[in-house]
Length: 107
Image (cartoon, rainbow, N blue to C red; front, side):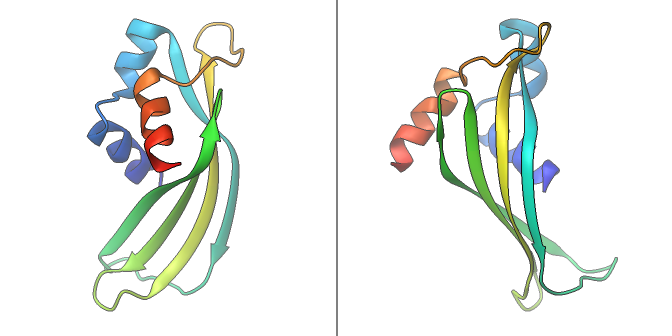
């Protein structure tokens, strides 16, 4: 799920290392709720989705699902809260403008 979130952010034009280097921002998982519904095997191909569930200001709430590609069986669901922090002081900071614009488009 972490990798899917990174790729999702990348698709929005947000690279985590560039946010840290150029804007002194870091995104951290603040909370994770995960329901494991069905097992998946090591060799299973999985599809992981990311959808905005809410947020604004300094945090972003995401809903994620992991499904077996072969039969679309949902293996797990999660709610993830991402917090935006100053990379040096570790104090809360506003989400990047690009991400806030995406949240506004969803609402």
